[in-house]
Image (tube, rainbow, N blue to C red; front, side, top):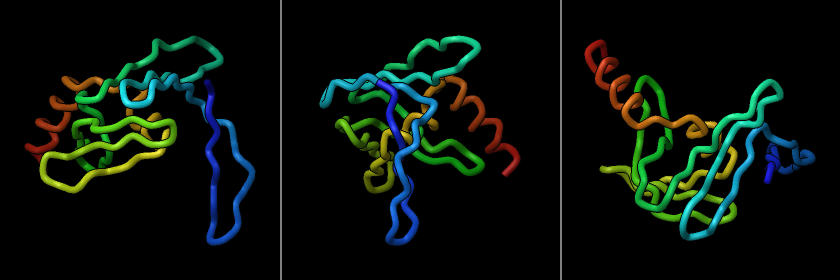
Length: 114
């Protein structure tokens, strides 16, 4: 199912805009996301409760454990902070091509320079 993103600015809402991501969700169990590309279809990335996922980034990619999956949000528990709740669009653009080993290697290299 391709989902839409609703943009709000102060008190007004804009019409929903179709995103470039598709998702298949089984609430409380798993989510599969993939980027819809006109040139080639990409393989979906599947996340289950208990898997690691990215919730934020700056110089480093911040990852945590997925605690819950609903039709609208994914809740991630970082190792040392309070829970982070991401809407479907934010979760999809951060994690559509998630590779835990690559993220850990990039974080280790970046830590040498900051």
